[in-house]
Image 1 (cartoon, rainbow, N blue to C red):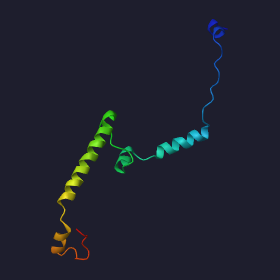
Image 2 (image 1 turned 90 degrees about the vertical axis):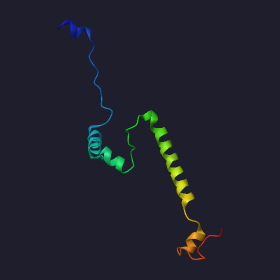
Image 3 (image 1 turned 45 degrees about the vertical axis):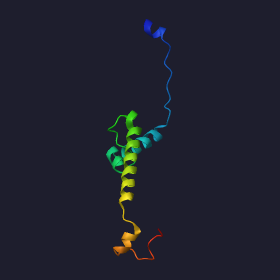
Image 4 (image 1 turned 30 degrees about the vertical axis):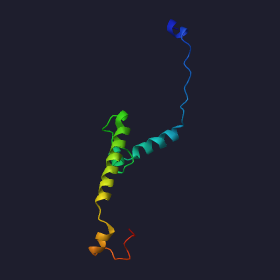
Length: 97
């Protein structure tokens, strides 16, 4: 017997935290998961071309820009009277002014 063997206690056996069947099943699920780009295309994941610390600010800015664009479009739409004149709406379809 060498001196190294006598000075070190035997190492305890570690048990896996999950059984082999669960590990195999998990591995199969992970191999079947969709590609990251597919998830981005389906709007499940967000694009990560911006630093995580800036992601919320980027989303807030995009939403603000979209709201501004929508507000501008709503201001530019024709009045109901103009739609009646153009023959797009009938008199009884126009909302009251």
